[in-house]
Length: 342
Image (tube, one colour):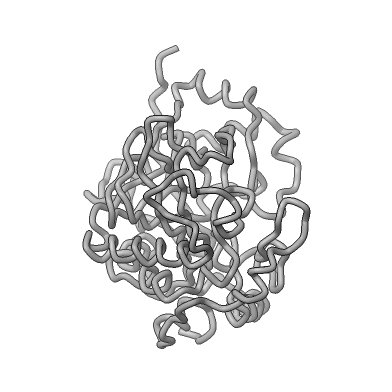
């Protein structure tokens, strides 16, 4: 079946019109056009390449701090006993890592902030306390993951509610691990859930919907197919949370260590007092959040702990409750964290 022509709708965020006053025939001539049409965009060189590589090295230094036996040049040492515990999607979120100095410095990079400020039409933003991804290709102790195509927005929310971000710190080619998107799927989000009312009627407390393989056929019949996003150090990847996507492992031919910081920004004006209080608590305990900067905030949450396969907490986490290198607190950081008001 030939791909259908996708019409770009007006996109409205609750209380904020995104792509202000632009009609379908008009263009911005920047990343917003691709984001609106394809559901994802790449902002090249959002961070200068040399600084991106410095952040990557800081991430490697953090990883190397857990075991002297780990050698990133020797894949045979890439085993669980030499590594910190990952969460269920194989990213690092505990041990205070999300508040390491290099993580905050990357989040405050001018090119990153400028992109989200342009997107939302405001400089007054909140940022998620999201994960660090260091994906060691073809680990000897792990099997390849089955793709888990999903959206990070509940079917009960219609229209655009969130644009996610990845600060890319390494080269990522077709065989390397990284973001896989289904371009155009965001434009069919409402149609899909109207056609699958049993799915749409369910409640998704954390704004995640995982598609069974059988449901992906619905998109393929409409010309929507997966695309591996390739990028360079310093690129910023953005995607509409309604875009079907997943994080892929490398192929057997992939040799690069994927290194990326997940960071999503939304207008601070959308957060209420209770959400900001919880966000401040998570910040003070060096905890993590999902990609939503002001929703689903859970102080002391189980998901922020380094849980071993048997459900116990990694003993190393008791000695790693704070970052190895704490950030330098400034007004910009504290406002992005929701600790200080704008």
